[in-house]
Amino acid sequence: MTSLTKAEDSYGAQEILDSLLESTVVDQVVHHFDLCLAEYNYPEHDVKSTNEFNDEITRFIQHIYRHARTPHQNLSSREALAEAIHILKQCSEIDDYSEALIKATTTAGAGVNYVLECIAKAVRDSEIRKTFDLIFSKTVDPSNWKLQIEITEILFRDFGSFLRPEIAAGSPTQFAGECRRLAEVVKNSLDTIRQLAGPFGLTAAE
Image 1: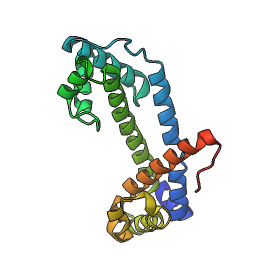
Image 2: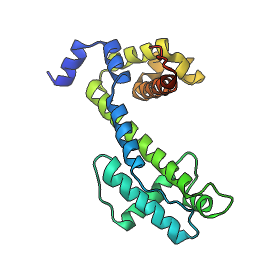
Image 3: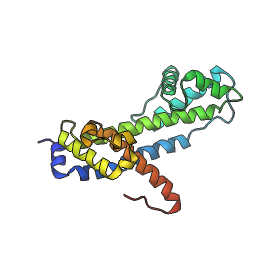
Image 4: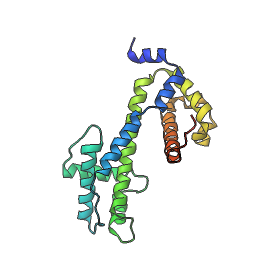
């Protein structure tokens, strides 16, 4: 019997979901990432040319990959620039490198630091997903369909308001194969509520 099976024998769907939603591992990843960003020396002035822009996003990616990302990587300038261009395509606020360049170098643009913030958010979100996937894969056997249905039933019952209406209107069995993604959505929503409640001394309802 594997340790994974033992874990599932010892804990039911509710206990497994509680451990996922209350996990501090993801929070620790975010905290470390944000500390590394706080140590970065952001440019004090906007860039004026393509070369200056490339230098800034290259330096930023090298810092993130060397200090904030797991595992740490030392990228060459060429590798870092290629990675930055790739990440810009994944940013929700920016379509691609060309748009980022315009935003960073034109007087009407948002500035180079805005572009760096977009890159940071994309990498941070990727790290969060990677960490949550690791936790989930160690806790839930993908071949255990019954357990995934039970977890999804709890998500629908207790956190249906956090899910898109078209999903919440469906059946747990229909979306059981997406229970990892649904659990991540719920955890992100709960974390946001806790962050908003914290400054006011409030406690988010569980």
